[in-house]
Length: 144
Image 1 (tube, rainbow, N blue to C red):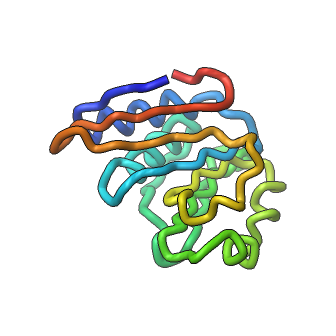
Image 2: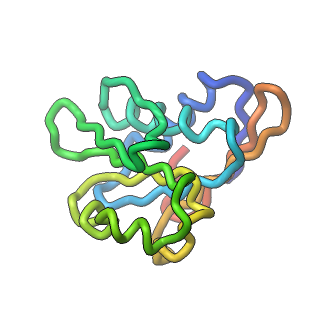
């Protein structure tokens, strides 16, 4: 399914709607160039999961963990920009995160193609104007 957003807040709103009922264990593999809305979408995902905190790109820490009020279903926000491949992701405990019962949102998924098993939801971002984005969501049940 393809969506068009015209502002950062619309991209966040789409992320919120997408994540409202994501089951534990979901992996969302995000693809797209720098500044195309991936982090805004993840901010929306956090809101849609009932997480009320500041969500920033984990470029230098590789992963940020956010919890909802009940602490039941965490959001693991990965940024693979600085990784050279899936081996480095496995070195930081990727498989452990997959088993912890949360949702994984992975920015720069194109840098770690070997980390995915085909069950992930693919979210592709394309800039189509200064503030306009085309966002294509594939895999998993229809969410939005």
